[in-house]
Image (cartoon, rainbow, N blue to C red; front, top):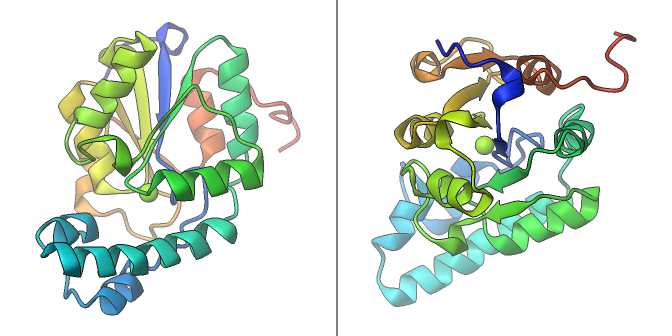
Length: 206
Ligand SMILES: [Mg+2]
């Protein structure tokens, strides 16, 4: 466990699906529509022929469009992003989704980020590259950077980059084994705000 006090942090990186928004991409349904049995979708696409990949990309795009257009924010998501930025620290979004789907979500909910890193921008989670790219662009040290996500890849990517990883475990009745790889586990974005030492406007009312 890190001893860094929360006031020292320089940057916060949020995952999108299931972290800032309530998870609404059904990966089993997408895999069935594309015709793959199991495993991560982007990696399966990468191994297809050009023609098959083009067709599968369109199917994936339709699923992502629909999910983004009907997305709902997690409680306190917009407020927490604003409050961190108002404290003088940049906030970034890191996702395996397309830039197109991120733009739908941010426009729909009026979210603003200092940096957005999508799958269209280079190597993806679970590799450390997206975290390191964001840190470099924001001139932040990885070990002073918080990364929060709801999936194993978020934690693997953050840890490999040397950042502070947080598992948002709200959707899990039973914690998955990999949850213990995260430096912190929280049940809500409100709980995460406490870890950061960021006060939300209505913190006294609940
Ligand atoms: Mg997620």
